[in-house]
Length: 301
Ligand SMILES: Cc1cc2nc3c(=O)[nH]c(=O)nc-3n(C[C@H](O)[C@H](O)[C@H](O)COP(=O)(O)OP(=O)(O)OC[C@H]3O[C@@H](n4cnc5c(N)ncnc54)[C@H](O)[C@@H]3O)c2cc1C
Ligand code: FES
Image 1: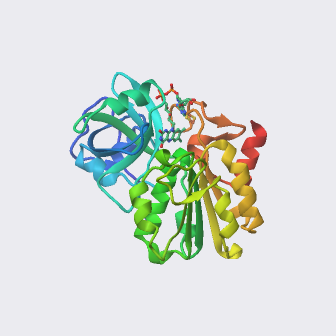
Image 2: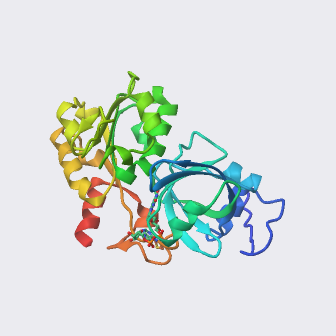
Image 3: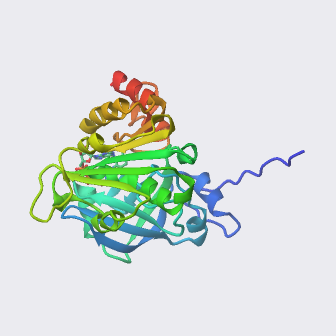
């Protein structure tokens, strides 16, 4: 017989005792942001930066494990809190990376922060991409614009465990070359035989030698083993219908097409109702949904 589980009661504002594990601390109060230090900042474009964070408490750092496609609630003390997708792979432990576009008050403040500054992070939250189901299969990943932020976690996870997946095809579309993020990483991968990579821009300039056209354009060249392929997509809402149509033309099953949705969120844990659509809470039932779930959501909107 199993001994009954010990319930650990921790007051939200008390100092964590040394006896609790990181997992116990995080589960005891999902609203509590844990202090994390900015350890690296990379400018990706004029409006996007990649931030690396490390939790200050060793126990939280060791216990934090995400699934590709999950998000955190990031807080800047005295400013506010925002949901942000985790952009780093779960295979890389000890730190997390968030790719953040400067769009308003919160993100503007984050962009002003420096290495060494402290923020609060709680999570990881939500349901991510079904990476375990994808193992042993081909994967077609399609990102548009900032959609590369959550998809990069899945892409890098697949990269780090490459032998566990079949053929991997990545399509990443941006409006113009100056908006292409992680260009250095993708330029290196262009020459790899174990990734089929298509970078495309709507409007090229003199520096661009990749594809030109919408993110659906590379589908013209794709050879897909439909019975063995999972599709994953993330990007602006307008992109979804057209990419799903292309995936369907290639006969990828609806059950195997997964997409990430962004809704306004507050609590991140299914309590406040801000992200509710029909009977679903985007923060706990998503943000990643398969085609059928996403269709039901859109019909309830
Ligand atoms: C699950 C999820 C994952 C996200 N991942 C990323 C990411 O990886 N990188 C990134 O740059 N942004 C991401 N966002 C969007 C990010 O949360 C908003 O850009 C941020 O909250 C804007 O705050 P602001 O004060 O800077 O801008 P505001 O001036 O408040 O708003 C600017 C834009 O952000 C939207 N927004 C504002 N508040 C929220 C909110 N609570 N939830 C969702 N959207 C909001 C607004 O509709 C508006 O379009 C994600 C959102 C969700 C829900
Ligand atoms: S963000 Fe509060 S219920 Fe989803």
